[in-house]
Image 1 (cartoon, rainbow, N blue to C red):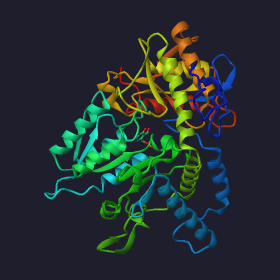
Image 2 (cartoon, rainbow, N blue to C red):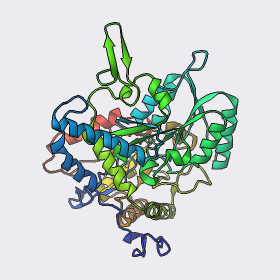
Image 3 (cartoon, protein in one colour):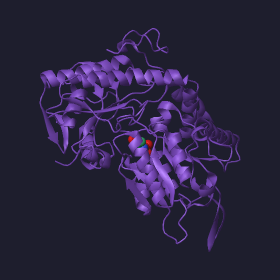
Image 4 (tube, protein in one colour):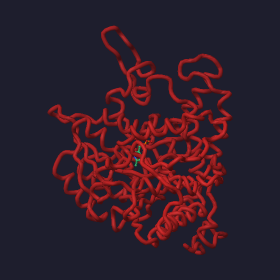
Length: 473
Ligand SMILES: Cc1ncc(COP(=O)(O)O)c(C=O)c1O
């Protein structure tokens, strides 16, 4: 077990099992049923997919709901209050990611939305062809497909080390007139990062701007546009402990002021005639329709809560949990922890692993059914990376955040060890492409209104979700 004596943020924790959550989250005491008829507190180790709401975020939502009314167009008192809350939240979100005074903050639905928006704003080349965008093959599909769709994307294979990857980027950026390098802040598969400020220097020297996909980095390490020199950052509220439907794109104003309006509709225009439309500059240009006021206030509340944390404490909490995951899992026979770069530093709390000879979906189903632990399995919307690393059949991912305790990590390591040493305690079968307990006795949550619908809905969804799920057999 990782000793924590030298980690100054956790003086009271002697072993990882004693590491407490850093901030309270909603649902940390939720009981879930196991196949043996008992219940156990849910261990949510799938934070990289969607993080639970911070208690302070949920409280803020409850506080502002009575003030909620239409924004931007209402003359009523509460409309004005809601407009002020929305605009103040926009400012908070920008400050949280170190926006420069002339940067613009656009409220979106999530990282995917932000990246699709920016893809419509990259200027075309002088000959009218799409502006060139460079991406690495380590990216989440959200930071790959929008660029592929516009037709200007080059996907470069990353190297086995950070140094090799940086020199590959440098060489490729010198070959063509790239407008943009779209880079992950932290891999959603391994938690590893490239040194952002250094990548920005390399790209700027070649005349390219840099977009940082901050979906995994921003909630876990914080990030500054001004501090790194990056031109844009995109991130998601639901991964930043504010699962109320808002995300953000923040960065340089010029492309965003002139790019294709993301949605056509009310609020994005200054004048509409029957024969044409004058569009607003950003942010209104890209925020047509009624905005998500409550979600945006929630995201700002999460930004406030994370900004108030000591960055060293945040990093040390996550490093303690991550180290315990990596050490514990690597110590089990047949378990292999996935890495992209041999020399990456300070990875975030995302750890992907495989169990030799065992389908990742079966291991994940076992962890849920017999231990009440939630992890992710599949290819994590990163098919090119998983293919390059030899994990076409998928893997298992555990991820942690500010609400995670050391005891949850210890539970996961113990459960994987039991699986490897003793195998599952009940029978599993593949139903519609997914592993499920044979005659699963677990009831659906009381009061959820899901009786009878739960199993069918889950099976139906999972059958359709092959784009991110396990590889086809
Ligand atoms: C690195 C990374 N980028 C982008 C996304 C897409 O985020 P969202 O689903 O919130 O749009 C994810 C989601 O897992 C991610 O991990």
